[in-house]
Image (cartoon, rainbow, N blue to C red):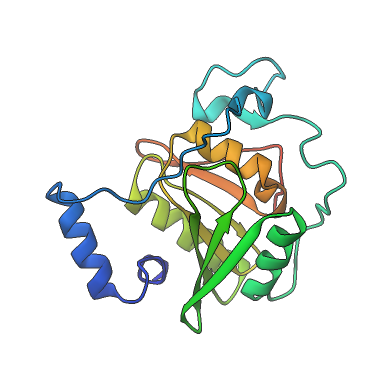
Length: 197
C-alpha cells in the first residue's frame, strides 16, 4: 500500500512517528512559504473571480501552465522525470533513495522557510498512483497535498492549502502532475493545471 511507501524507510519508523504525533510529542515537517507570495496571485474561483478559500471552489488561474507540456503522460516514469522537471524550474534538488521504489526529493530555492522534502513513490501504473495518493492524503489528513503523474505519486509536507498552492504554482508542479489537496474528510483535485483523463 502506498501509505507504507510514503512513511519513509519502513513501516516501523512510520508507525513510531504517527504514534509520537498522536501523543503530541512532535511536529510533522510543514511547508511554509516565506517569500511574501500571495496565493490569490495564482488562484481564482471556478467562475474566474477572486477566490474565497473553499477547496471545492478553487482553481489555478488561467495561463499558469502556458508553455508547459500538458499532454497526459502514458509511459512508465522514474523519479528522474520529476527531478529533471524541478531542475528545469531553476530549483536545487537533492535526491535521497530510501528503497528502489521510494525516493525523497529535497527541494530548495522555492521561497520556503526550509527545504521541502517530497516523498516520491514509483508505482506500477497511473491508476495505482492516483489511488494510493488519494488514500495517503486521507490518512495524513487536512493540509496534506500531493501530485501524481503517470505511475509516480508525490506527497508533500502538510501545509495550509494556500501555501501548498503557491508552492505548486511557483515550482510549476501543478503543471507537471495532478495537484490534489486533502480537506477535512475528502480530497480535491484543483483544476487549472495538468490532468490525466
